[in-house]
Length: 82
Image 1 (cartoon, rainbow, N blue to C red):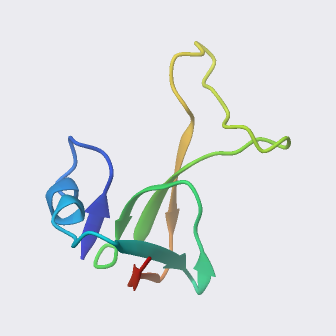
Image 2 (image 1 turned 120 degrees about the horizontal axis):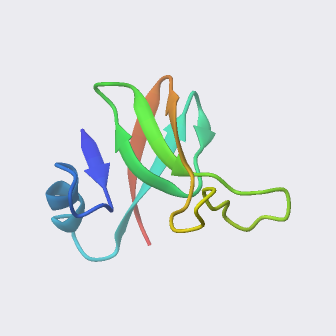
């Protein structure tokens, strides 16, 4: 399963098709992932926005986009009623 909040990603449509009140909880190697943009269980990766030491998101050197990192491992997506 692939879910994404990025409109240009193939996982965006499945994310938008989730029923109202259902939220995905993404886990990488058993730990909950925060700031997740894309999660793919079959390819085993998550794309996350990188937080700084102060908790704010880190910008790239041109300061026009948030730094993102792709992390690999066992990805689980749990759909939880909110």
